[in-house]
Length: 396
Ligand SMILES: C[S@@+](CC[C@H](N)C(=O)[O-])C[C@H]1O[C@@H](n2cnc3c(N)ncnc32)[C@H](O)[C@@H]1O
Image 1 (tube, rainbow, N blue to C red):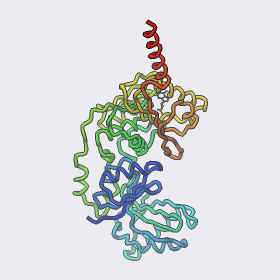
Image 2 (image 1 turned 60 degrees about the vertical axis):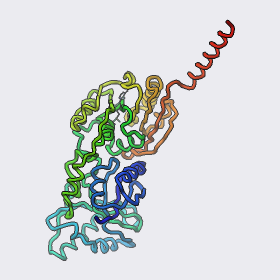
Image 3 (image 1 turned 90 degrees about the vertical axis):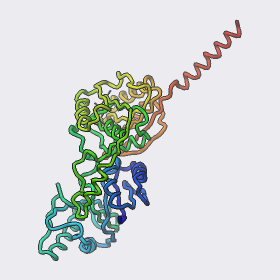
């Protein structure tokens, strides 16, 4: 099968885990870029990347690269692309653009120029042109313009891959599915210990964890992928990839809780839709009152950041989180994502790792806290106790 360059888009900070996912799938020449990872692979890799990658937002197949030195250049080069290989008159298409260039200040204009080039290429050949449909097109094109470098690509994913297809209820401030999966993979967890999200909201982190532990493909609940409408779509090949056996046995326990009963109901509804209800338990509880559901394990959680709470109350909440972790969760490793520097200061624990991520537009830090059994202070007290005991014995 012919190999070609593919570009997978992701969120800032997730590039290394995406590169690892790609290498595990067998991608060649994997190269980390800004909010993207490129690789060389064939059509089966393109299907697998869409269906299996947990940290991918889009998989693009570049079809043309050129330099633009003035506004006319874009139209001129775009018109020379063999559009008829990808698009027929009966199909609809859309164009979206990512632009960072002094030549083109707005991405709408860039999309419009490429749309004109496609329309004119078709009109010259057939006297008619395919229609534009921004909402639900058959074929999506992506224009990337950085300085004077332009790359035009086919978007093989269609709707962004974070739309896994399992969410029936949104809830308040749900974390993006790709970010949730990326955080779990960054933590190094792969189903080898019990898992807790004590502020689970609509259950995204719990569901992504269960899918990782059980080896369930990230795209299994999706109804469609963009490439299924491509003229070269190989149904047999995709069907073989789709129906391959990915699932593994696991006895891992996944537990979620939230202070809001409504959030727990939302989480249960989403979990039910995945068919993973047997693996994931959800209970409505204040984290400060929750009894640890396992002896040890991992916590990955996304507490409130305080955009709606006063700074003092956010500091209070994070202080309580830190106290509870110290008092009740010895033996666990806790990973917390937050944009609140005040919150992290108040947690009162020293992070062993800090990873810079973004939650939407908010710069965040994802930090791990090792909750050892017995603190340094206790060790000293124990030693002193031993000394006292030895002295007492000597005095006998
Ligand atoms: C940012 S949201 C989590 C969103 C979640 N990751 C999702 O994907 O839907 C924070 C959650 O923390 C919960 N929360 C706030 N204080 C809490 C507490 N003391 N104990 C348990 N949950 C709490 C809120 O009810 C809210 O659902």
